[in-house]
Figure 1 (cartoon, rainbow, N blue to C red):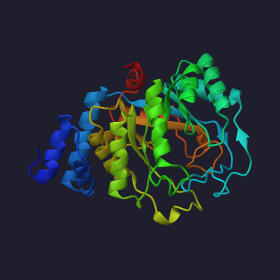
Figure 2 (tube, rainbow, N blue to C red; figure 1 turned 120 degrees about the vertical axis):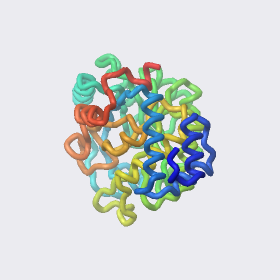
Figure 3 (cartoon, rainbow, N blue to C red; figure 1 turned 90 degrees about the vertical axis):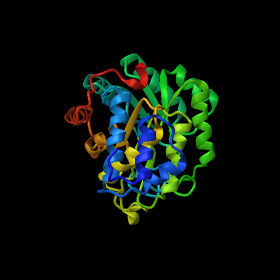
Length: 334
């Protein structure tokens, strides 16, 4: 370990390298390491080394399809799809034909999973129907991204062909959202109980979030055994209620990705960053999300025509950073 690191930081990095679970205070110590310091780049290097060893240099690519657009009444402050945001006034349910075209294109480009996202009022039965039809049309693993669910609904997802579910306790849950943090955690337990893989990210990170808030969610991901976790920053759309706080940079996101990776230890099968960028691929991330359809970060109804990045571009970015997207998925093959 480099001699110019603070002894406490050096000890924590050694512990993480040995896959010894970090304590809360360890994580908070890392959160206090400033950018542009030897300690910051050392923790990024440690996370990068851990991921390349644990994930076998696999570059993961999961394809997000936002199934519908509407003025969602849930009114999460960071989301462009809400009624309060006033961006989307017409309801759009993308056709099954369009969804299948997107899914088949992603499969041809080498996507490792299809992540089907819905707004809070999207009919659950319709999500199941979409899953069943995609299961007949493609061989790509299906991941649901929907509201809180019951055990019976979790079993219905499995019956419809889903193998996993994305669900996050968001930063500011119950303050910036109308949802109950404990209910969100109960849904995560539902996934574990019924046999769905739980996919997660610490999100949506902004400058206003405290070290304690962020570390809480890193530890939650580890303790509940997330198949993957990582960091997603909040993207401020014009007129967002959160716009006054600004946004974190990609470099700051890479620092947080590294800390999250060290906290996760030997638990995950991949580690994500969103939106796709190169810096985090040197800091422990190996999983990107390409996107079409609705997105809570975009003003376009089809984010594939806006902020969304396609699978081919994500794969090329990974190749440039010596990650191999052609290898089998660690999330589903292991």
